Every structure is written in structure tokens, then in C-alpha cells.
View (tube, rainbow, N blue to C red):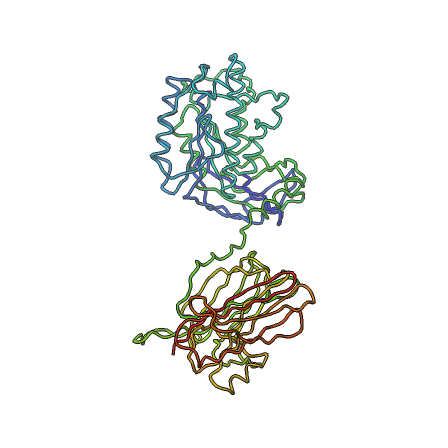
Length: 571
């Protein structure tokens, strides 16, 4: 039997059932014992493997429309129920289907109780045309001839769907038992060309490696008759008999118990033969004949196979690409603000209308008495835009008073350009031994700094003495994240200010108390360019402990912008 056609390697697989003259399985054949002819030409058998399958695949179609009520129905229930109890193993999968069951919900199962329930509900209705549900009233109604034609189409469609579904479950041999007293081939009518037919079922079963075993419950044992001198003429095979012959199945008739047991045995032990084909994609049917050279051994195999056409080959390649496992993105970590760090994010204008993001951080202050608290020594920052593109990925060391970046050292700030909108930040926080002790995940809404007058995010630099304050003039000086300072420190506020025209904005600043009341004006030094940093020098020695606000206002003839920076003096 044809199991599969591997398009890439041009290999045909044929499964073959071998038995001795008494019908017992022969399991000791070798590669040299087999001979294969493909369209009459001898092919070299490249592999012969004995397959013993203890996890078989079965489908049973109970054709209620073509089985009579009464004795035939009872015979079906008894035979199929015994088959499920006696011949199915614990690893076997089976599906039992009846007319009007959904073709899109075919599912094989090991649930024997559910399977037995379907079989127990089987009720033959051959010759009974009264509709029993809305579907039959709407679509399977009319004269007996019209009803019979619709029922026959339902049966062929269901059998074809089962064969195709079984084909999706691998290249192994599959068994389809069709319980019916007979089906006609049906004449094709206009508008029904795409509906499954007898020929479509043979093609689907052949390509899916499905052996069909028709079970006719109307057949009863007959006594042996004396031979007559004139042999009876050979009748024309029925469609169900042809299904069995073309797919390497067998007719189950007068002895349903033995026939069903034979179907189960055929699926349990067979040889898988492989050979190369010379014309793998011509789309035609190729006759296959299998012979065994050993005496007193009989073999059964499918009569041939349908090679894929070029369209089939292309379709298979496209489906393989569509169904190929996609590299799954790792799950997005849940937002989490680490208590081990104190981060700061600032905005200024970047290139090409984007916003330049500056990130610095400091270790969180220790809580008095908490000796076991972990201390962050550095972190690795990854910044992603809304589409997952990486904007920044690298280590960042902590900042602090008068921190100056030096070439060759881990930078104390991360600077990157991002489009306005949401970005995702992930931080792996490490201790002094470079071990990850916490993670910080947060979303950030990046400001759009385009406009007539815009103030970016003020950077705060701190110095504890005159020498440190002089170092803040260096372009490599890094702002701090903290907003708590002592009165012994001196702060430098560096505020990015932008104007759309060459007109320099008028920039002023005030120191406000916690309530927003003005305490005094602050001097602002600015450059003479449209894009500039305004700098505010603020010694803290004259301030009492408490919370303060620095308010910055930039004004041009086209508008104004305002920003406030809050800080606290703690000692």
C-alpha cells in the first residue's frame, strides 16, 4: 500500500501485508524477498521494514441512510461494539461518524465510552425518507429519488473527509470501515463538479494511505451449495467492492466478526517497502505490483498510487511553509519597577525629528537596619520600540555627584534616539559579582519635542565642593537621578530649550517654595543658538530643609513653554 510520496527525495513508500497459505502473518521476510514493478518496470527495493503498530488509527462511518432498520441495524450495533471491545487496544485511536456529523470536527479519541455511545445510537433508515430535522427538511427533501441522491452525496462527502483527515495523521497505514448496504457512484450534475465523488474518495484514500473495509450488514451466511457444471458469470464490482480493491482493504460480509478482526490485524503488522520513482510529479496514476520470491507466501498491496502534479507539488511546498513552526517570540515580561534602583529619563531633540532619550540611574538608598538588602552595582538596559526593534542594548553603570564618563569604562548613561510614543525598557540589575538580582520592566511614553517653543527635560548635576563644580563644565559630566540634596551641595540645572525660528527665546527662571510661591529670580545663562541649553547655578547653602521648585519659562513671539523641576533639601 502507498504510505507516502516524499517529494523532495522522490521516494515511494508501499506497505505490504504478507501471509502464508493458512492466512497467518509472515514476519521474517528480507529485502531480497521482495520484487516491485512500477508501471511494469522493475524497481530496486531500497528498504523493507517490518512494522508492528500498537497505536493504530481507525475511522468508522455508520451510513444510517443506507442500512435498513431492524435486523441489519442490530447486526451493525453488535458487530461494531464487539470490535471496539475486542480488537481495539488501549493505544488505538478511533472516530465513529454518522451522516450529518460535522466534517470540520473530526477527532480521533481513546474515549471508549463516547465511542460506544455513538454506536449504540446507530439507527438504520434505508428506504425511510421522512425528514427528522431542519437540515433534512431544507436540503434532503423531495421525491425518493432526490432524497436518495442527496443521501448518497452526504455519504461520499463524509467518507472523503474521513480519508483526508486520516491522511493528516502521518504516513502510517490507516483503516476506514464503511458500514453500508451499498452506494451508487452518482452521475455528476452541473454545479456539483466540486463535490466529493467515488473517484475522489479513491484518490484521497490512496494519497492518505487509508485502507477501506466496507461492511455490508445485509449479507448473511449462506449454506454451501454443490458445484454446478456451469460457472456463474463474474458480476461487475460494486462501488464499495472497488473501494476495497483499490485501497488494499477487504469486503466484510457474512462473517463480520472475522472481517473486522482481519482489518485490525492488517493494521497491526505489515512491511514498509521503499523505492525511487522516475516520474514523481506527472499527476498520473501509476500501477504497482508487489511479488514475493519465497514460496507459499501471499502478499497484498494497493494497486498503485497517484503521483502529485506540479500544482500539487507547489501546493505542498506552500502549505509546508505556511505550517512550518514559526519562531515564537519569548513572552513579554510583566511590568515591574525594581526597588533596588532610582532611574531618571530625560528628553532632548534628536536627529530626523526623533527624540533623544537619556537614561541614568543610582542605587536606591539603604533602609536603616536592613543589612540584608541587595545592592545594585550595574545594570544592562534594553530599549525596544513599539514594533520590538532594539533602540539600545548595553550595560550602564550608576551615576553620582560629579560623575564624568571616561573612555574605556562602562558608560554611566544610555543615550539613544526614539520615535515619539511608547517604548519598552527592560533592565537586568546586577550585583558586584555580575549576578542578576532583580529585573525592571516598564513602558515609557516618549515626548514629541517638535513645536515653536519647546523645553526638554532638565538635567540636574550636583557638586559637593568647588573642584567638583568646575568639572561639571565638561561635556562628559553625567546628570544624577536623585532629587534629594544637602545644603553643602551646589546644583547645576542644564535645561534644553528649542525655538522653531532664529529668534532666541527669552528665558527666565524662579525659585518657588513648596506651595508654588516665588522666593526669588534665578540667573539663566544661555547660548545664542535656536537650540540651546539654559544653565542655572543654584547653591543650596542658604536654603532650609524642605521641598523646592525651579520654574523655567521660555518665550518667543510665536509662543511660550514652561517647565518645573522639584527637589528636596534634606539637611
